[in-house]
Length: 210
Ligand code: AP5
Ligand code: MG
Ligand code: ZN
Image (cartoon, rainbow, N blue to C red; front, side, top):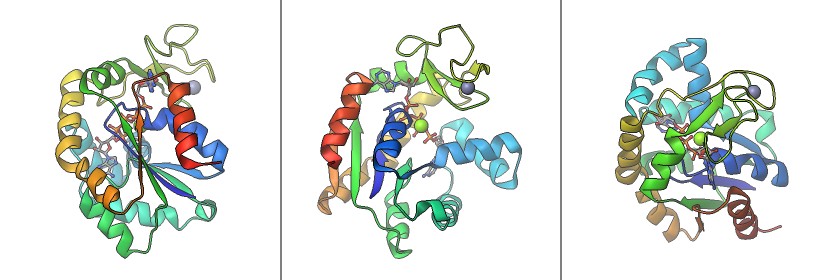
């Protein structure tokens, strides 16, 4: 199965990805996570991407497409993949089709602006293992310490309120047209993301089928 997770910043793509990955035994590929890893390691790609990410803008299409093309060649993608945060423009979607990268289903997680701001500004991420928390909705047992690995949990660099607002605007202008794009192809399923994470998960499983 080849699935795309579509949804604005803070919609819960990463949160939902973990369960989908396990249930369908497909590999979770988050372009945002790959960029953040490269930023952390100071690679040339990370250096190019960082300025865009810090401002809440999209990284240029060419960079993203090359990265995804390369990633999908790896062996672990043979059983299918879950693309989180890609494609993010119609240009990227068309480019992946030209490269022969197919998609079976697109899950559109719908969440309104106020909730998105609350979710993103309250998010905390483990610096060591990447586990995601939220100060109100999914707090760590001990403040500032990851439940899973004991690492330090911190704010993501682009989760300041002004940057989140910019990311939402960019989503609406650059990414939201993909909803129509995949609607026309009959591949999209819409899920109300403003519910408990476990309820959202059930709805996604129901939409993707057992
Ligand atoms: P990326 O990392 O993909 O960020 P994003 O799309 O802005 O999405 P987020 O990761 O912020 O949100 P999410 O939907 O994963 O939510 P989460 O599950 O964490 O991209 C970052 C940047 O990289 C971009 O801005 C761009 O610069 C660049 N980039 C990446 N891909 C690109 C591409 N294809 N083209 C160009 N540039 C690209 O949840 C958020 C919080 O809410 C968490 O705290 C969580 O615990 C909580 N939460 C989740 N679900 C629920 C729920 N149901 N109820 C209550 N709380 C919940
Ligand atoms: Mg994410
Ligand atoms: Zn951790």
